[in-house]
Image 1 (tube, rainbow, N blue to C red):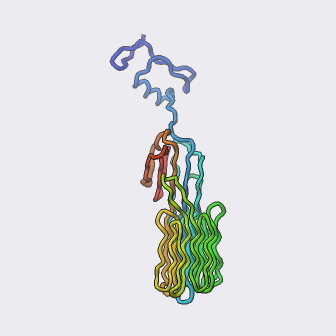
Image 2: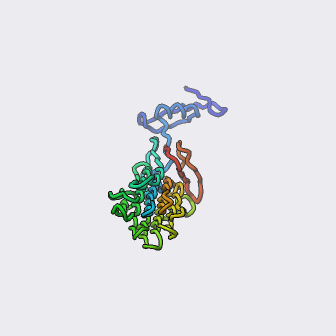
Image 3: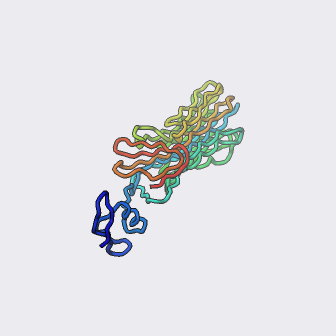
Length: 313
């Protein structure tokens, strides 16, 4: 008869298995037996993590366009905004997390703002925002999550948004330029001799535990002492000849503000963000990279990345 030591007493019942390598364990098992059997595939350890997660993936906003003595710059388009529940995840494999950078502002004549970087979680990709138009840029503005605002000279037209992620940019009027598109609305059209177009509205999300508005368009620039367009949802404000353009807010995906007339300068879009959450009845992830902020609140485990990394369940 086999005898095994178990927690300070002798057991006369040896552990056995039935049904082969994945069979059922019977008898009295010591802790050592359990570890040995687990390594041999005889002691199944149930997966306690989630099978699906809720996500928010916001790309980097586009940079504002360059202004000069003749025309102001267009507002940058917001980064693509995607959110949903029920995204399947599998245990044991690292899931990629990419946080898109904000696009740079236009650096000179004929140079529109740069598109923002894409943000990614697993199979979900949000497209970077389109850059705002600049004086003397005659080509069609790039498509982005949301499109950038247009400028009159050069004949550029507002950039297009990506379906399901954002909206088109606004149009110019006279010397003033259009606002960048946002997640919830098209960029505002400029008003001749009055102001640049406002940035398109962003969209609010409470996935982090509090309501935050993301992916708003940047305001278009204006000439003289007229008013630059207002950015929303993290989008920057457009400037005028005296300055005043502002960058998109970091980790909102807001578009950059268009430069004013003699101000010349235009501003960068805001970087993106990736957030996931699932019920706190499931176990925490086995590992993460990229230093996400991890909280447990309101019945959820919440992971918030402001720089690229990964997660493994």
